[in-house]
Image 1 (cartoon, helix red, strand yellow):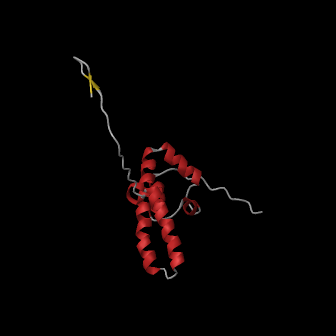
Image 2: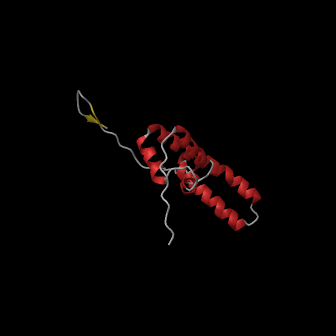
Image 3: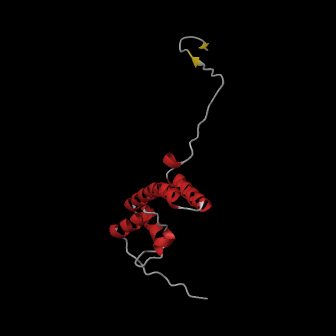
Length: 131
């Protein structure tokens, strides 16, 4: 069994967080990012996000941009992928991720129709209740 190598600690800086967010916005996942040299561990990134408001905002914005990136890939995949089954799986995965990351734009639209009678009763300060 191979030993797992502990990552060297990376000190927070706006430059490192900005690089992480740029990678996320262009479709890279955290497992891929933390495997890169000179990148912090996953737990370190989450700690930065929870303790630093600016890092948290940068990360949230990067995830929203990632949704747009995923949506942009859908047309390219549909145009370039020759195997329809493979295209469908790749497109569906990106649609699902985009809908979870940016539900207002890419999520399913839910419409609720309410029907029925409405009865309002109010109290008249100088008299009886009216309907």
